[in-house]
Image (cartoon, rainbow, N blue to C red; front, side, top):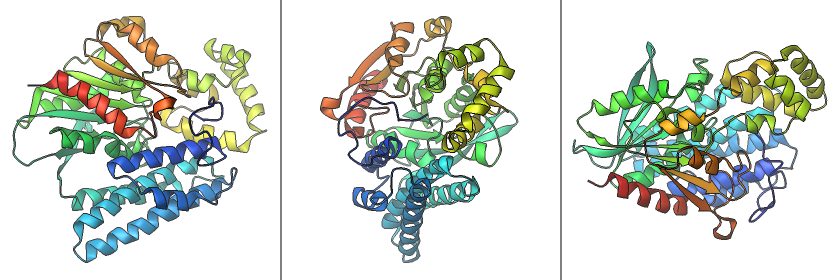
Length: 410
């Protein structure tokens, strides 16, 4: 997915001339609300990166992450765990952005070492933060999904619990800072977990995405409701970006969640892939003309090495070989009317103005499940526009958790 085609929006181009870089900086600034960054060091790190300097963009995030990680290590060595934990979390978020920056590099040689540095910083955060955290291995198809259960108090009481479902390329640190601290402050336990096609399941185990996400969230629910410190009747899930499809898809089959936050709503993931293609190419893909599609795509990719590299990076989680095979997989990520009608869990669906990846689909999701959907708009006038409201995390948390608290009161 790219941000090149986004319409004019609040503070357009304020942080970088390259729209993808600009959006990434917005996300990094938004993450500061949950402790995932410091605005000054973010802006200083990316200040001199030119619009087409992808190597410089990667180096800026990798360098910032490594510098803050060294600060965290120094604080930890002197026993200053509060400072260390804060720095480890910032480092994990910065290194997570460096992982995504590999998408536009000529080689992905830096991918695995950068990811491992990100995960190492996250694990050190978990080790040093004062909050109670339990590492979980959630049983999944003969293996396990890594999870981290944060608790506001080590009291063993059955509390409402929020599950954080990562987006397609979201780091676990970014997922945590996006909603985790706000949930803890309201007395929730919070589980953030890694699913198929994400983080270490992709980079270390080569496990791809799947469209039938109920096969993922059902084992997560099973693991949580078996715990005496989780109130099984007050279980919620929060999904961002592509999880705006995965969560509603799962809710059509898994009915034990009491409430869900979907940011934004997604009914057809494929539009973010096919929306930039000529209509003739889209028709070839949808008609199953794989050989012709691959031939035309191969020709087109010769004219843009950057596009070819990004395609390779974005296609990898789908676990398919070839252009047509990847698109065929993506086309299965569509929510049907039958599935929409089967959703019985109340959903708060964000609808940010100038949504650049799945415009209009929040309203489409609400229309598929009208009796359980609450559509909440975020506007440019309040600084809440663009995909996942990058500059409005406090506003998002207030609206989402006020709604959630009212449904999980008990």
